[in-house]
Image (cartoon, rainbow, N blue to C red; front, side, top):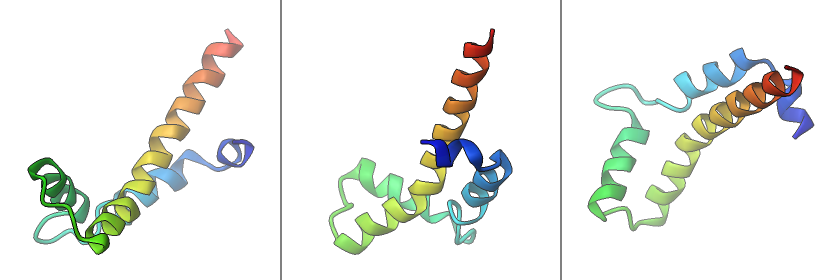
Length: 76
């Protein structure tokens, strides 16, 4: 996980806000796919891939924030 620690937080925020939310109109793909998942209609492989593709930036951002908080608490 050292590669994650070396990357700036700004990069993960930028990825989450662009790739993670694209396309923006009529609604972000991640939101559409999460609604499909909740409704039980997320069954096509392309939809599952699309959910993973748009979720990865968000997961990386959460992981980066977690790593930052762990490092800060370890210093004190």
